[in-house]
Image (cartoon, rainbow, N blue to C red; front, side):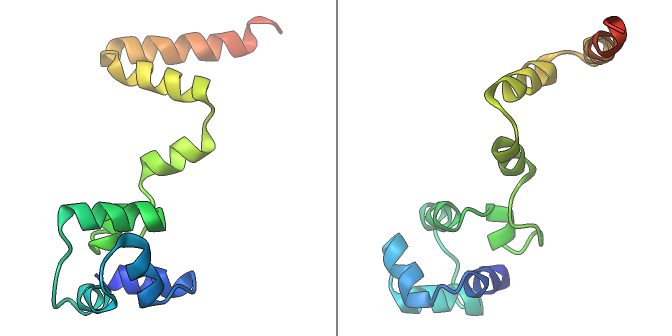
Length: 110
């Protein structure tokens, strides 16, 4: 979990402070960062929530701290999220039609 150490240090958080925030010992954080131990799923989720990063990032599966879903949720309004959710539920043919309708609406008033 090298990304855990890298991210923790980037936000100037020491092992003890992080350990206290998620309810583990400082030695536990040290063991995670050195690869001597892995967190339980519950602890991994606590780390993700506390640091606001993805599990894939903490598990060194990506170098991008946040998932695309986290990024989109921070950047999109409720209406945009609702539209995206509905769009994803459509079959591909209807997705193409929906995009065409939206593009058509852009130029209809001109």
